[in-house]
Image (cartoon, rainbow, N blue to C red; front, side, top):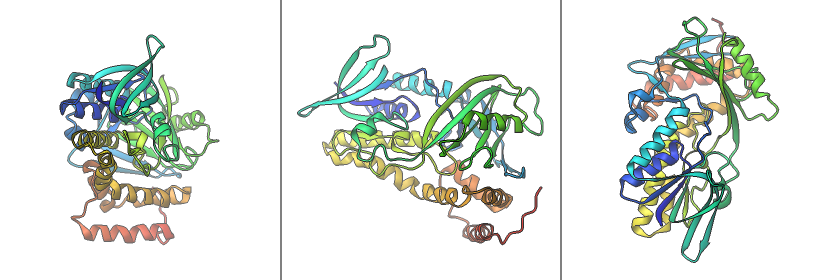
Length: 393
């Protein structure tokens, strides 16, 4: 009999299990293992600090971001007074699962099947990876952190299958041994080009001795492997050895409900918390895990099922405005190559660069510089309306 059964052992589920175990609750954590989520692996300083990530988990430290437009315009944005850490999910996720187990969580390996109930009792039913048999574990509450297309959400949450999805695909390749103009082990490249992705972007992210090269799209008839091959060729990486190929859906919008007003609450991709525009998910997944753990802990202490709704309220109180702004930016600039070109042009502006990275690094909209915000608003309007004349660099 557990206080909480966490379905999923990625960053969100593992973080929820860690927090609950450290709070003295009995926790089970179920994960399939053996599956690596496609992910660029960027984590900001706030994540590293808030979640105590050791330096050995960082396989690269990025000092520059390069934006590349459909016509090949390049804008290099320095990351002032710091760096963005890079992790490989192949190693990062097991590290978090190990940390959860060390905190006291009971670790299970298998595939979630369903929740069974009888009166006030409930059991999570899963298929054990080793034996292949169905197992039943009794619990008081369930946290669904089993990713996009969550089985828990589909079975238990109103509208749990409604969130739109981008399909992401990347290839982990052996990185060039020598930096050149096309590849730098301390630089992330983000490619806004309809030939690579008609509605999202492509990326080249350094991972130390390897690199993540990939793209995402909502358009179902795009050939992801061909688009990634074209990206590798354009980035001078076509001849590099391919180490892994991975693909998975990524949610585009937070769900309206994160709990079933009974005994289940969602976290991470299962709740749809991936940042619009950037597709950033690790930080928000881990914060979502914290919020779900806080809601479950409150519910266990008070006996009020309504406390499960705290998970969504806590998350949105802190991040709703950021998601709203990023969503508006994606809607404004990702619709055509002409608009992508203007977006990259806007990134030349020093105010845009500073405020963007202040917001990214600290995960808050910066309100301390109203004049800069006003200037950016005017520049944004001029770019969208075409009043700015394009000059190609």
